Amino acid sequence: MDLALDTATGDLIVDGGLEIITGVDEIAQRLKIGLTINLNEFFTHTNYGLPWLKSEDDTSSTQYFLGSSGATVGYITSAIDAFILTLDNVTDVTSTYSFNNSSRTLTYTPQITMNSGDTFTLSPYVLEI
Image (cartoon, rainbow, N blue to C red; front, side, top):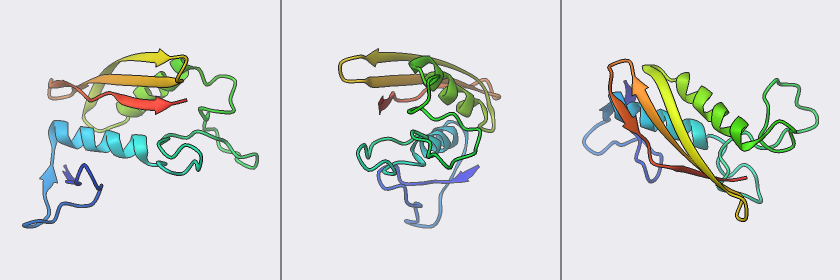
């Protein structure tokens, strides 16, 4: 259960009182928040939303997607899969992706299974890498 956010603005929906969401809508909202938490943080690519660059003084164990020799398209998709599996009520994720070498655009589409048995496919998530 979570408070509903407006999909366009990310603000709480307050018209007529706060809204509560559950199930598929809650998982989709949590995933969108997780994938866009750093959105606009990288000044030259404002559409990036994931941990892209590691600063030289960063001592965390996070493997960043750029500036790391292991950051392949396969690594990025498996990292997103792993993130999805940390969400409450998610039991499985099967993802597909395509990568356009010339535009360096990764299109990632997850199919998520919840502990209720419900399965749904989220809209494609597009990243420039």
